[in-house]
Length: 224
Image (cartoon, rainbow, N blue to C red; front, side, top):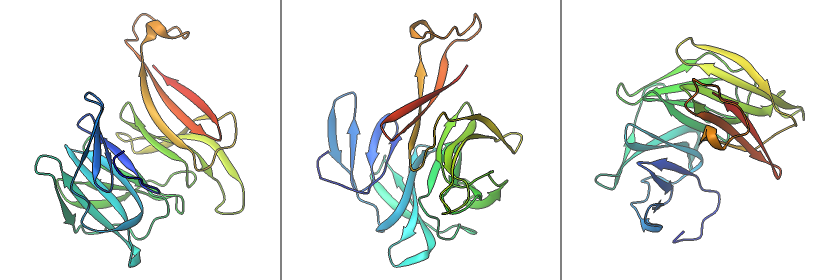
């Protein structure tokens, strides 16, 4: 990166990696470029791309009981503040993803799940998760929440992999992690079946995987 950073977050947008704070990386040309910094300083925040723009959601540094939302337009390299009805209150360690043009938001201090429609500029609450915390990722039009805290700060950790079906508005336990996880990262990758030891079958064009990373280990969950 062009500048040293810590406690930041990043997101992919239009095939490039944007580091919140004012720079982005072009993997095709292997170059970093400075971009316009966000308008408001926020801490404890998350970022995700949706409809060709970048959305940053986090707590304002001078008002911890409310979230601030900002939107970055890469075409004109500028940010705007978004005031939206029913924006959630303070959330600890928020995580967000975009599915079907809607942004989904979870945190480690609540089982609540929030969704934001950028076109309608409206927030709403969804069906609660089974437990709070855990990594959040989208795969095949569904939300995957991996591991996390089970009983607040009592020290119990979860190994469940929960899946939210957006179309059906339902949560269910998909599988279980092989070990306890907390404050881990998660991402998705696409694998060429011809290079995999798992038989994808004659009608599977590809394999999709959820990767859980933390504590010097990784878990791969395949979805065909």
